[in-house]
Length: 234
Image 1: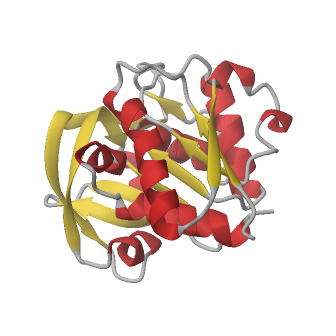
Image 2: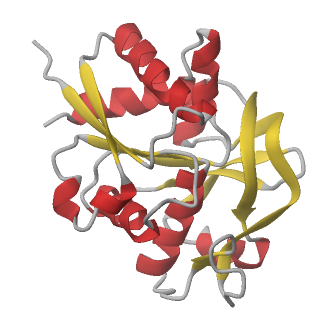
Image 3: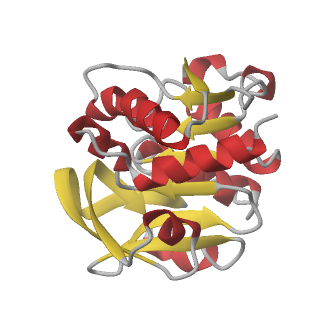
């Protein structure tokens, strides 16, 4: 009998947020399609005062709707997943904070910041998008050989967004020159997903693939995330 996979949803739950309504549906669809028993719990960011708060989960999903009540809490959870090799998915705000976590703790940029919460920062690795993507949809093109390309099984897809901030191009080259690499771009070549080499599953997207679940569709990336969880459930 397969063991139950426990997923921690790191973020500040608000049922007014479309993605927060979609995520439980996406997880249930994935569990049913893969016959992979799972449970999930919401983990408020202010509760992550140390790694012990998230250590019991087999996998972590850092969810949309930032600024979080505790940026430090979100970063602690992401760092734990990265260092302890727990499957990790970050969407929208989760993408932004995964970038910040890698900048601070892999590249050693202790001053890496998010322009939304630190607009005067010299090293704002997350900056305003040239064109806001609030309730917008667009094509994303997957890089060959990436985990996200494997998940979708195709070269491109149309995905929805609700965000105003993304990866700052001024720091892009340094950020994706190591184990962090680009997983997907938009039509203009702007980064829309990243993933971490050498990790069982560490993928973050600026778009919100979970939204497809509200139309009854299993999001391919969520299915791949749960496959990784089930494969490594402790």
